[in-house]
Image: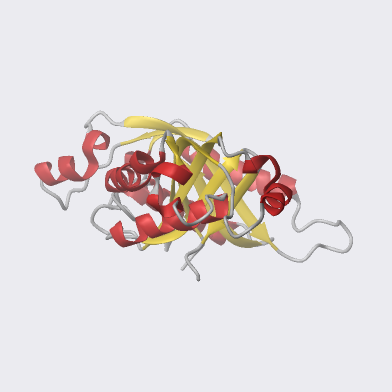
Length: 126
Length: 136
């Protein structure tokens, strides 16, 4: 889990269009969420270890490359959201790309994010 | 392709009874659920839609529109209702959780414009749920 703030605002839209599209999420001061992240990997079970991949490796990677990157940050200020709106759809894709590029020890199936208790998002590549 | 899931809750009563069965068969097949006075559940609904992320908005679907559609088409019709007697979908169908998931799919699918309905999941209790993906 990590906690971060964001503001949904697109420079490609007028002020009115931003408000009508994003509503309260367009508040210029931003707002925050506790984001719950699920990373699903798949692969054959290693004969020697009985594991698909070492969970300590996966935990360590996600902590250093994902949680440390996003926790207690304003998402709008991160380079991946310089030109993209930090919706949780786009956050899902960004985290998927980080894990896909940096963790080759198992096959990445999907990244799922719970933004609130009621809303969740999944990306499994294209 | 990104998948978005929105949850909601509703409470309703129902009972299971097939008029084509004898009283004994109804009692044997449906057990306590055959009590004609009905019983209730707190249902949790999960609606999953899928689509490409709109490059301008960053959204798969406008969540407010999805919430409004779920409220109007599902919650307003089912919440605090006796499904067998008040909801036309169940005048001839038994309101099992299976049929409830299918009925909710049929209510939502034609109303969704920007994203495609992927899955309807209905929890009848925390340890029992049904998934419907729209296939016949």
